[in-house]
Length: 383
Image 1 (tube, one colour):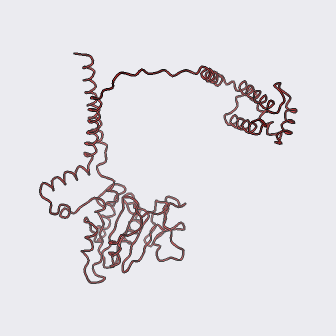
Image 2 (spheres, rainbow, N blue to C red; image 1 turned 60 degrees about the vertical axis):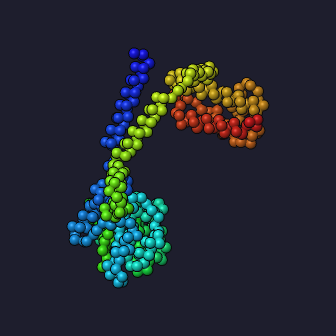
């Protein structure tokens, strides 16, 4: 067998093993639920609301899950006023703007209550974790976002501090809309904070109103509403696609497909003649300087380096001042510096007086000295 063919087969087997390993790791490590499950009463994750839903059921408060589009909620309303109204709790997976569309506004104005957790608000200087006082006890709030309310508006504030409102309400027609800047007001992570659970229970408990939690936001669908009038084959196709979309199989299949396409493309690609790698030219001067600097650094010869640089900088100052190339005494140089530049003598003296005194100069002192050199250069007449 040709050695090149043997090597090619080995590469193909190696590539197949890599693809299989990536697919297996994807299936094992990928989360089993999508990000939209955050805030769902079906979720037992820290950001879910399964514990709060059980809390409401255990205390005997009737509560139900809504798994249909919001537009169908209006059909549950009876014609008589103030009878059979609804309080709908929406827990956003991500922060959203605190505003209502036309359908929601009309529904609230008809006398219903909409409670939205996870309304977008600007970040303030408030501490991330605060304890807010309410009628049912202290409420733990973990967000720096606050909604601005005018000082004279005292009826809209439900929960907040001097930085703004954490929970606020607005009256629309016969109903109310209640907003909260955090989607985790009574999440599973707050099971030990009974004040949080009691506070949310107080928000959603309204006289003569049934309580519903919007699970349609989190991807849950009423089976009768989801399938509708679709045929049997269409239902099976949608169910299979929905299953893939809600598990780690779909991203796993996508990754395997992409890697297979890349492998096929790389195997069939024609690279042509090999291009020789050019060796970059070596700068001997730069290499010598770097080698010398490394040797002096390891030998801790800071005194030699500093004295050499100081003398060279003094000669540069003398040439700029027209004093020749012979090192002068500091007093003569300082006098000429003051007369020609108008700068204080201490500015140049600080540059000339650095000494290592037999010890290694610290990096901070060295940087400060280099900055003084730059300052002196900047004020020289010929620079």
